[in-house]
Length: 472
Image (cartoon, rainbow, N blue to C red; front, side, top):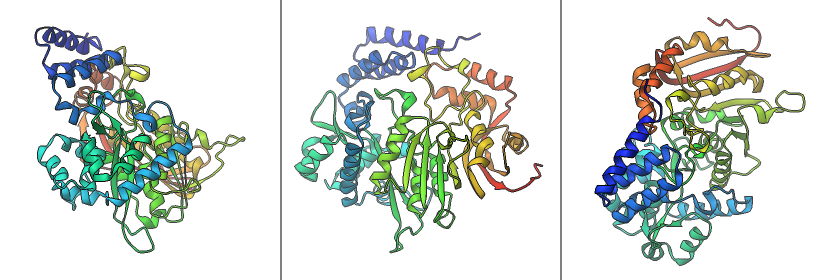
């Protein structure tokens, strides 16, 4: 049987042998960095990426995030609340003055503004497209350069930023850790986080004008930060959940955002008129980002709060029950089915799968807690909306209602597109390819042993019902 981690070890040895003969091969040096990080050696991985950017200076413009640790605001150590609030206010003023919006970015990049908004990773991929970079930097105006920095992830020369933004603004961005200098070239500046501009299509102000929600996330790239603690970039699941609830449904309501990540779902609800929003995440870095993003959008701590904890645990009072009931629960839980046996032995702790992704062996570890205890946190006739992957999704309507539901029952509905379904073997191959050193064969075998034949993507919608509910 194939040993998990063998792929990474074999790749490591091949790359090392190649670099011994071709020490200037920057591609091989980058691949070595990925293999070393998969094996848990963060320090040597950083040195490999550093070597690649020494050999190929052009990589410093597109891959500089691999050599940074988040800076003073977004690094491993959490800043105090005053620093976080001041940094958010500084960035909000700079981006607002430049009309930093999703529509503006899509138009400047030649993307359709009619279809669904691009994901954060889609914007990030444009850093490698010379035409897009030239289109944003050609006029040397603040908006284009800010898109390059905060949306595409390109490094920008410091003299150009000083001439465009002014010395005072540039100094503020640097002093608040909103920009950092490249490790190899101090004249190049990088954004330690991506700022995703989500244009909410519904009128959300007295003037009836749409509002752009600014959301800071980590970049979709390996960096010096532990992969396990990263804050998920804005993906299709986040967008569908954030945009899937109409304004009239959240206006004046109390909203709970479980597994909040960057806070995008709850913050979108707040800008569309929710009374209060509480974000909960087991990852303290996500709590920090949600608080930063609330301040970035000028939302008060009285309206938006974020706390650390697992699902409903922070809500429990002295008597064990929730201290508050919510009209709406939004949830984007970790839903990737990740059998531990398929991962390299070193992929544990900070080197393990990202907290925002891994949903246990069958992907439902967190989902079961969210569904099973939802009725205890929902107000009468309250609603849960959850975006997730489901094993054996075609029969999920049979086993989801069977989860223990204390006090009150739930009416549960599952909505999915049959085209968004993969066989267990296809799913295992795809997910294993995302994690260096993972074994697709062991992954598929573990899914088969758990009785999983296919996995699909969809929505779970649940409503608290009084009295008995027919679960058929």
